[in-house]
Picture 1 (tube, rainbow, N blue to C red):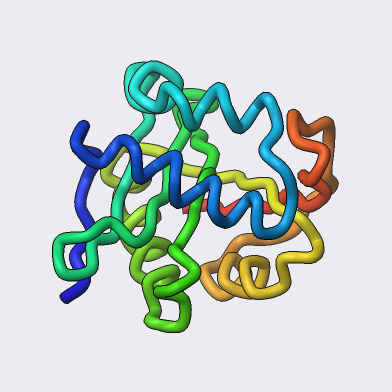
Picture 2: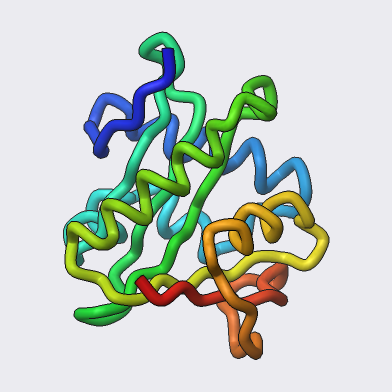
Length: 151
């Protein structure tokens, strides 16, 4: 039923729609979101990152991106699961797959930004070993929590 796959161009629209659904459910779309969501090939993949999709019966229901920050560091970003599919361990499957992919790509650290109101997301990140650190400047108004995982 559930399959995690690498980015394929035919699923591009789902990268945007899945992320829009979760962002707009809690916050608002910001200019920094639009840059990545509307052009994932040049903003995520071409610089050396990747995007994964969770397919449920061949339909995209979740996604996550690794955005290159440096040779050894990537940002885990744009992780979203369709609201109709939450509670089916899709977030766990995406997290396990993206951590494995990051190691395969040679990254030694993952960073992420989130919001303190997203308790379930923070719990998921902590479960996989992400540690809190001081939040710095963020391109997102909602980015008040920063976390890091040493791989």
